[in-house]
Length: 169
Image (cartoon, rainbow, N blue to C red):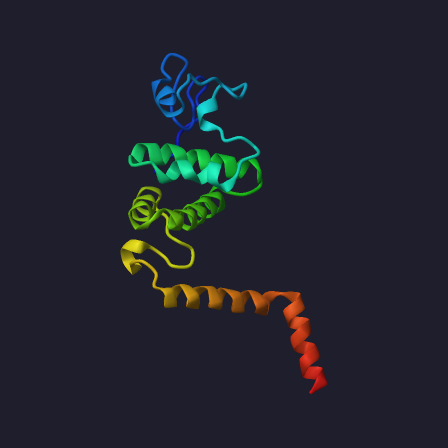
């Protein structure tokens, strides 16, 4: 996706201007306003600091248009980087795609497939529904079991428990 160049008086995410914020009104029900002195970010494109996972990702589950998905993805990445200013864009995008892929799993197969297509994401454990189909109960159990085993191997507590068990032998 082409990155927007910052220009005063034009929102870097949705490209609205002071004279045309029609799409912001359509999205939020009210006109937007500038939220920074440079006038490069409008209020319709900013998520609040305190937000639940549902408040952040549920709007993406109802998007059906690629242009709106691109705008909302920019909003997600911007929100991510506001709380981790040193994080580079590629890492913020990866995090948001994983979160979208995970969250979409709770909304049914059709929604999951649409979200994966629009946001170019996939479930972090099960991959793309288009490539792998819906997970079976066995595949779900195996994925979580493997994840749990890997996590246990990496934790200091698990390592010290193993070392103690070896010493007792």
